[in-house]
Length: 410
Picture 1 (cartoon, one colour):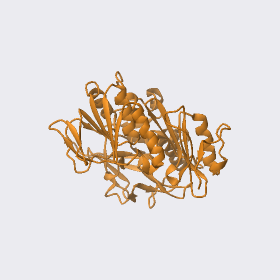
Picture 2 (cartoon, rainbow, N blue to C red):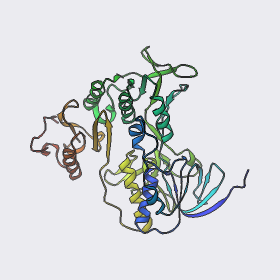
Picture 3 (spheres, rainbow, N blue to C red):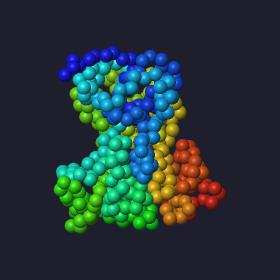
Picture 4 (cartoon, rainbow, N blue to C red):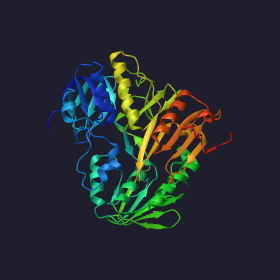
């Protein structure tokens, strides 16, 4: 066993996914020319995460989609260390310890370790049960879909729905189990959740809602999923998509403020520290637009965080604040969400999920537009984005001169 090494670095980025890589790019773009070291626990060169539940599950897909082309990544002049997992942070000594026992001293640190998928609590997991977090997960699932005929997906959020869509496209018989009465009702409301349920049904996927999973059957490989109402769903393959938790276990002894992720201010600086930042899904940021701490698990949010960190490191002005935005591709439809629907209630709708387009606009108690869900209509999405950004009353929102099919009396 070798002797642990201690090496001083100027900028250390822990996490080699979207937030970490975008921070690296933004730093170089802003003129930061000091040495940068990036560590990532996976063996793969930094790759894009959204394709894991979509393109990478298609027959014939063979490798992750790179975040940055090889030649452009080389030009960033970074000491990239793959297969390297951070296990501890000593914020006072400014030292990160890795699983190999090495110590990295830093001047600046960016924590970009992302999130970890939740697993079914208190339930033993046989073979054939997966979560989706990494390229290796996607590769294993792609191989499983070559022969799996009966697939059960636990959770009807975006990850679960995207996998259900991909599995159905591969010819599997897919069943989705959701504890809520309609998919994503806690974020989007029951009316919009019912529309998402119809999307599954229209594509031959069975949805069991309002029921919990109580067990997984089969040894050594899964053969079924037991539900709380006594039913058993036969399964060759099970995918669990019931949310995530921030990857902060390695920070337990650090003394950093960790609650729902790493607490940080509006410029992503960790309070009580100097030169330590959090970025991406792991960051619980005090959001200047909303005036409260938020941890937003969006691909676009991770991109924006890189720009915010870089600007603060080099002493530049913060970039313009953007509205939260997320998209999901399911069954050939593109679902886009802008703003924070959960901060209001459905105030206006147009169309339906089985029509050419579907729009739901959310407003707060004063009638001000705070969020929107739009399916297959980028032009309308832009109008909603502008209205939300400007804080317009939802009754004044004109969509292509057609208005909205129904407005909810408030």
